[in-house]
Image (cartoon, one colour):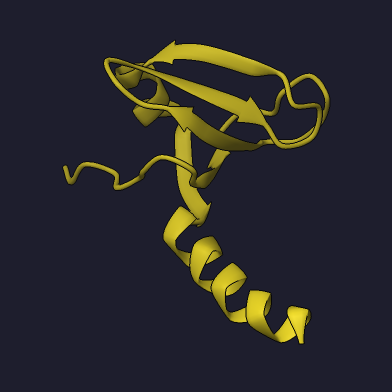
Length: 79
């Protein structure tokens, strides 16, 4: 089975919802454990990498994609 690809700053969809009602999480720390922050209520949780990979469904928005959008919007907004 292929390993899931994700990186720091990605917004990912999890299999189970957070108690606040959203299942979107932002990756804010990576290592042996991964810290994710709920997009809805901003609560952060530290979980083992294996458990994270098992419970992650897909990457909704990658960090590189968001930086590229911000780069395009930045100069035009300043003019």
